Length: 172
Image 1 (tube, rainbow, N blue to C red):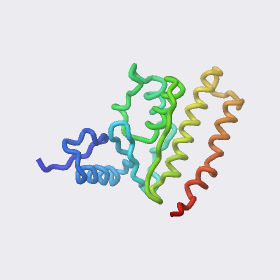
Image 2: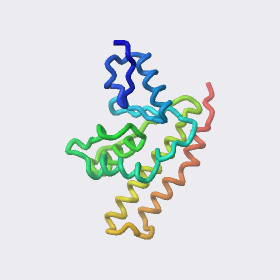
Image 3: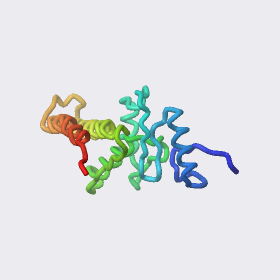
Image 4: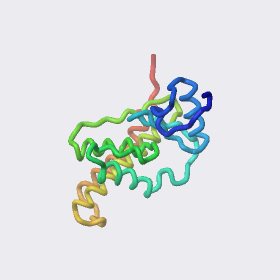
């Protein structure tokens, strides 16, 4: 008793109270693991630095492969993966494109918490999943553009608009 533990999913904490949650988030942050899970929710603590490999193509493909294309019968195989925002975008893509269910992703936090960057990462990941799916449907990884890739480009080009909303001031 009394020993603090660090877990990737805080549902696995023996006692879920404020001190245990804060310790877990702080310890993971110190170990350059900005993402922590609480069941189906992914919590991000802004590392305020670039973490090498965190957003690599290999990491991106790992989440897509395990959570979209080769998911188990329940569509959720995240237990073998560390928490990551790619988990959120992969599961949302699967829910929409594979299972046919409407999806939404909520990104919330204080000013400077990294919401805009997180949305950019999610949008980029979703676009790359869609691009991969389109290329696979065409039977080539060199599809040379096409309508679907134009849509992906337009979605990614919407980031400045999202940033404008993110930088808007709330008046009270």
